Length: 565
Image (cartoon, rainbow, N blue to C red; front, side, top):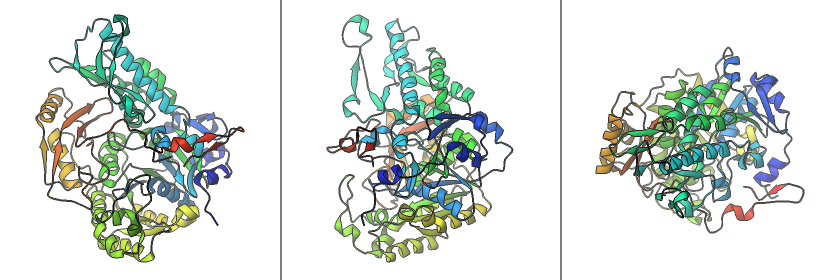
């Protein structure tokens, strides 16, 4: 029998009325704003109204360094959330909203997979309630105000060669990476070079994800730096008089979206910052609601534990004040075999035959990556649990190899079949996570606020990535000095690097040591509240491949979406 597609499973699933889903969380009907029959916005008043309820155990789901195909982290997050019901616990899930760029590109959607999905799957992957469009509009309004300011005489003295605010769009479009603005007549604006990023890379998206209230959102928007004068003085959105209108556009986008899984576990979907440029986590606002809505709040951090989880700990938790009780590290046989260095996996192409052959020794070799990611969780004082996300092409001996690695590291582990079996296939994982969360937590930030920016960068590079040292290009050194001088030195760091290696070199597999991390440039997301050093070439506007997912997506005459994956 052929296993049904994710979309087929999702479209045949019955939906439970959202007021019933919300009631299980303690959210009363007056706090819901329905968007059709299957999605609702949750008013921020819910944070205060739920505050007297018990605090849930807070669990973050991360992973080993992924292959280009991904390791099923969202599917595991959903499967774990569903599994808690099978062991008599109530859970709420909090995840990011998918960007339509990857949905129409190679990656496809991000609703989970198989029988561990968020539904309606089509709505989640296509627009949802328009939050991404609100971020796009707010971001581009500020860009328009900036260029109008230049056209009207540039009273603030912005240096045309040091304007950092670009435009954004929620599609993959490489032709927009670098553009020239203001061509045409004098009335068409000041001619200058700029470009577009994808909306998920917008600082406004990171602001939305890190804001703790509407008033905090407004304050963060006002602090956004759009560029600098010739003497290095930062110019902000507030000085351009643009932050108030941006906040007005984002008013409804601040409210998290309530959906459900195939098994009717509540899901809060909110914000979608990139996992390599920004901090790659869903919103603080969703977590402030979810933390009082059941026994467990399960959230997900982008890419591997060296990236999303590190930023979850040192940026998101530092900002929200919430402390995690346990962390899941998703591992797959194929990812660990890839980290042996013996195989090349290319997104959109079939896995190599040799990678599918039974070879537990290769899993042990690539297991260096899992060991380091377990350590990356532990250095923050959090108990790790390894989720072995099972694929049909795996061999039991290879699962045992991962279990052995976890045991050597003193970590719990469980083989999961949630893709094929839903929550029932992840009950062992739920039991292990519940045990880990019951242990006394000793959550620790990696560095203090008052450390210098260099000290923060070097702490992440050496303790989390395994680098021996950090080198700085002259431009990066000047930028760090400028940020310290302008009063940004207290901010945490969000290091932009490849997600395909713990190091900054995508070709280095496993857990490389003895290497030097090169910092070529440093940028400031002052509104969001972090400094991000760039290590390597980072694409903030992806391109479409030769056979993008968009070619397969369509809508039938009755309105049914087809071709989503």
